[in-house]
Length: 101
Image 1: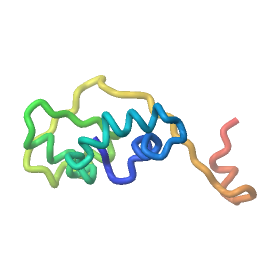
Image 2 (image 1 turned 45 degrees about the vertical axis):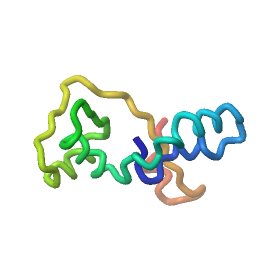
Image 3 (image 1 turned 60 degrees about the vertical axis):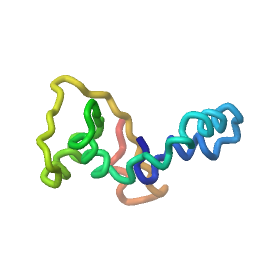
């Protein structure tokens, strides 16, 4: 699945590592035209395609669920730990809010 701005795919496509570019050219590029264009497109495929699943953060699912033509099911206890990073300018007045010590 590709969603607009999918950083992992861009990393394969533009990598200086020949192996990464080979993975992209053999396993991704031939199918890229069938990738969904947005999260909502992917969620709509859940409604229209048999044996299709989508893993995303809960807020995105909840935000878009009312736009779907089918009911979705959250699989209990099926989750992943996610690490996020926030980059802010040095000296920003908001640094204290995000400081974790």
